[in-house]
Image 1 (tube, rainbow, N blue to C red):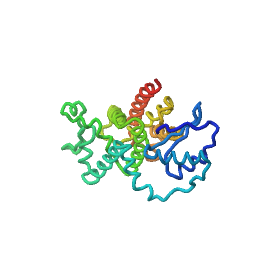
Image 2 (image 1 turned 60 degrees about the vertical axis):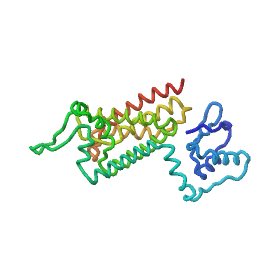
Image 3 (image 1 turned 180 degrees about the vertical axis):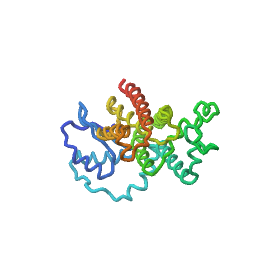
Image 4 (image 1 turned 90 degrees about the vertical axis):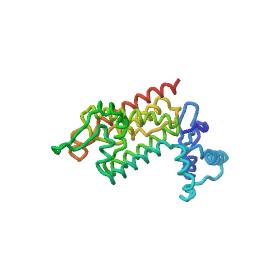
Length: 282
């Protein structure tokens, strides 16, 4: 989010909000000690926002109906991709790996799992060791399990949260900051799950929980940074993580969940969020 202008504290902004949403201008209005602060999601829409605000301030009629969809479709996607290229690339890589799994099957899983997997001559699962993996130079395996997804629902939900949180981090603090979070959380979550005794696991959910923790702490400890996450979404995601750790989850078909990866990613995200929010406050 980008700071645009300060509105009077006693101004009724309901009509302005409706007009901005009707014009498809992504925004947020926060209450600050000095007044109401107007934020803009996409800097490319700065002129459109100023036009609506100016008409609102002059008391002129405002748009109340959303424009036709095709009026935004031509430039919306390139604008989003320019704003969050790493988020889009990470999402695209997950989709590519998922498609490769559908074509090549277990070969992809064996290549990207945290340790090499195979079938021994006795017909049992053969599992490699992490020290041997690192000694042989296969360092990509520390991160690569994050790109494995075992089903459409697993993929869709992880990509949804990656797009929601990753795009916000990248738009506000740049691709380099998001890359640090993805690498640190991906590796940290995978190592936490491996330390729990699991060799076959995957998913971007550890990174998603890291992004949740990071965005939440930034929004709470450095409100001027522009980060925002609905409180109920935080409650839902943390509640879901706790639920999957109980026996009730297994009873309703959610027992095979990488709980340690979720927790490990969350810890990494909170640590990074605490550090960078502290710097932002200074």
